[in-house]
Image (cartoon, rainbow, N blue to C red; front, side, top):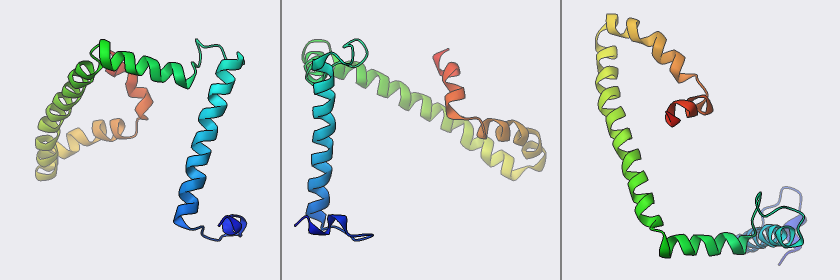
Length: 125
């Protein structure tokens, strides 16, 4: 079953790939749990998976996590729809009228090539 895992450029059977993937994920979580319980990593920096799952369960059952996620999702959708409502007409105007395209293209090109992490401070404001 596992004999073709080490064949150069060979393709393993789908079930073998799934088994190896699940085993790798399990090993990562087990190593994380072991590191957290042994004290190698302070719990303030990386709590154990069992503590993470316990906190998730507590938030789901006691602290209205679902409500807060729904409110945040609604805000994202509203922002997306407002941005689309502005961007689509501007794009149509830019493609229809050369003067508008010439006026707005430098600003749009500048924004287009900004890395996304550079926009994070704007989203915090």
